[in-house]
Length: 248
Image (cartoon, rainbow, N blue to C red):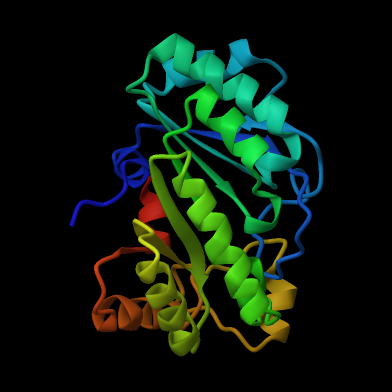
């Protein structure tokens, strides 16, 4: 199965990472953002702090980008800024300049999706935070699935992206089958890593580093691979190891 276009550009090193804001309405214990970004309304194009659309376009040229991943924080907290930068990049580089965006289901509504579609968004990835923060119930699953269905009405490619929390195989497989039932295109599972801002929290939860040369967490890869190997639906499941991100 073909992996999502956003992932293809990332693997080839052809994606501009546009960090549109550090503001976020969630409080995920595994969030890897640094102190200089987390909960701060700043913009970065790759590792370069910027203040204008022109600087984002310049950075895209410098790194020969063929697409952009819009992230944060939560980009939908700054929807007009997000659409301004997205449209400018699309106008500069054309329709083939692939754009994907990360957000959470709680902020999705028709008005925002219309704006994102008009600005040229190709792919959207929702992160169901409550599942991995231990607060998901049936009402939350219904909310998630309803918001994903709404996304499908406006955005061509719709997926879900999650961290691989060790020993959560059952919960992730349950999520995968629910997503498959409504026609979600893909589920991306990222290897969980320690970061400077999460180290103390993750250690307190009993997590350990998997080896001496990586910041990845012991058991995370095994959980992701178990899910990928045992899922029997039609949806694409991608596993993204920390080593891939390090190489990029």
